[in-house]
Image (cartoon, rainbow over all chains, first blue to last red; front, side, top):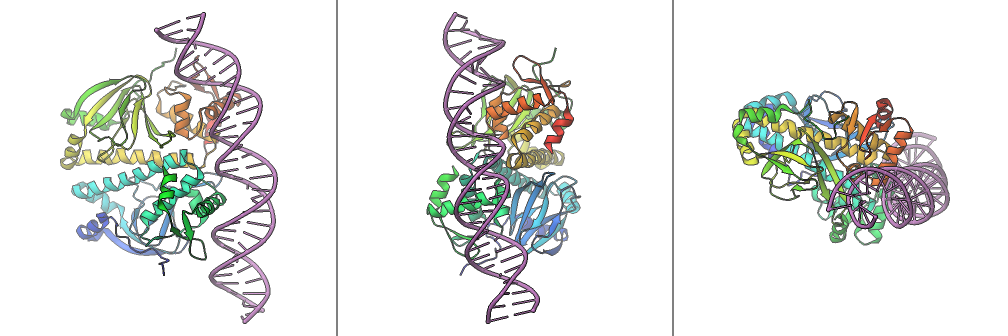
Amino acid sequence: MFARVNVRPANAPSILGGLTAQHADFVTSEFHYRKGAEIYGEKEPAEYVYQVVSGAVRSYKLLSDGRRQIGAFHLAGDIFGLENTEHHRFTAEAVVDTNVRLIKRMSLERGAYSDSVLARNLLVMTTSNLRHAEDHMLLLGRKTALERVAAFLLEMDRRLTGVGVVALPMCRRDIADYLGLTLETVSRALSKLHAYGALDFLGSNQREIMLVDRGKLAQLDN
Amino acid sequence: MFARVNVRPANAPSILGGLTAQHADFVTSEFHYRKGAEIYGEKEPAEYVYQVVSGAVRSYKLLSDGRRQIGAFHLAGDIFGLENTEHHRFTAEAVVDTNVRLIKRMSLERGAYSDSVLARNLLVMTTSNLRHAEDHMLLLGRKTALERVAAFLLEMDRRLTGVGVVALPMCRRDIADYLGLTLETVSRALSKLHAYGALDFLGSNQREIMLVDRGKLAQLDN
DNA sequence: CGACGGGTTGATTGTCCTCAAAGCCTGTGG
DNA sequence: CCACAGGCTTTGAGGACAATCAACCCGTCG
């Protein structure tokens, strides 16, 4: 059968790997967060940097009336909470039960001064976040609902280590808030893609999706 | 009367200033681009980093059918084209007649290895771009047309050195493609804000806008 | 002058949102 | 073991906001 929980991906960044090797004292501890638990809040002082060991995390901003925009999902292996600012710019919550590794931010800053490789890695990670945000602006500003959902599935397919199957850790509402849509629109788009023959639903909870025809999805993705 | 062309802002980053002082050989030349001229294209090798001396630049991505998302406007003093990747991720064009200073990217990279201050500055600039993109995702994903236009005006008010007046260098279509709207919707929103008493039009071309009541705009901005 | 670029405004359309109902699965407690 | 509640999802009906299509205005420039 198919794994329900995401495992350590093959493409996990060597950044923290290298970091732990060279700077073992940076890694302070590992922590478990229950589904829905807040890891840090927007505007809180940024004391730590985090790496997802297992599970998934959502980073989001809120408007005053509760509208929510999820800026990114962090999956196993991903590093998040690296702000380079005094305060967090997002709220981070566990999407499902999640294990997280913590690194003290102060040590990273200090390290970056003395260690040009570490400095370079910080820049690479920040650039990678920037690239994702830039692509997501295009999606949010200019793509249709169907195109957004197709792009989302392809992104998750790439990032989750599914063996042909995308096992989404997040609910429809999370997907909607990531894509700038409503949960109903996401659901309708998925149904449409199913009818179109681009995907199949596997599990009983509709979160395991087999991408039957990636070509059809890619065509929608532009 | 009011200046029609943006002048060098007081808050221009000291980053490149310091850079030119310490690494004068990095600055290769200054260049003029006519209104509408392309400075570089998406996926072109990133050879240079740029700084706007006067004028304005738009950075955008296109979908295959021509839909356009402007990721950022670069105004006098701003640095752009700093990708940290081999290739540019946006196309950059002059919004109006624009003067631009060029810095060879290779020299920057080399400098960052030996010079930790320079490395730090690269990170700061990238982080600043990231923060802007993160805020813009919230706008594109979750704000209404009126809220987007209000936020846009406040951003331009902050960034342009207007003496009470925002002298927009870009046309309605550019604003629309920045805000994920159509030019008609932008125009309607501006008319609505005018009727609402939040702003006045000054010039004959409707691009000089006086923010009569920033409070009203800020309220819409959340 | 007449063409053109840029802007506004009106009428209509369409995509997505909102509101609502129902189904399914899981877990819990009698 | 079954009843039932709650979370999550799907689907339908109607409505709203922004897009589209279109007309017109204004200023500039050849």
